[in-house]
Figure 1: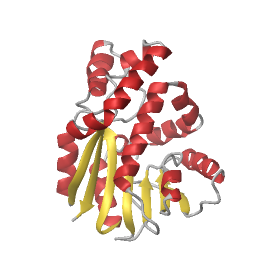
Figure 2: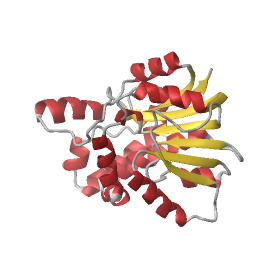
Figure 3: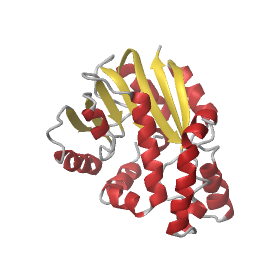
Figure 4: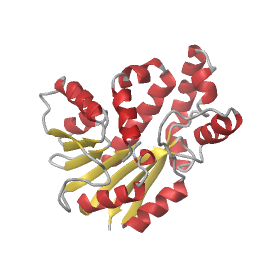
Length: 252
């Protein structure tokens, strides 16, 4: 992968949690992302789970408390360092391992894992379909992939691709961040050898430009209050329209 991508996430690792906590809209996005992933994952005692692009181990604690074992892989060595520091606070849980590595060339045997998580990862991988093939390879027969990624056909996607980039002519900060459509992701998973068994949308905040940059904090809180109450209904009824797409797929 591009060294620019690695450098970007190395820099992001230094203040990732503080950046998230500074904006309650971003906090809400990540809260719902984690809930969606863990709900679909449903970790069981003794299962071996791979988290590709694990970042600073943001979902590990939920999994470890359920009795799962987890290996995290990330291209950014600084993200792995941050993950180790975070997990030191929960050393009594055990059952985890962290490695630097390339998602398109996973250094694990075939049929090794019960489940794989890829949350907000594939949009940063130029050869993302190859990464899906690698996830398929390391899964056991009937193993499960839980994947989430930003949705190009969402209100967020409109804000980014139409308003931010085309109308405002602003440069997106990520060196590589190609959001997917529901149709595109489903077809790629099916072509790779997965069967989709569940899907839902995540986060129905109306875009990011006004909520992030214009609304005062008290209106952000009000917006979250109302969206939170209809989030699960919208996620189930309109899975192709949330800010993030979340899919559970099984290896054929």
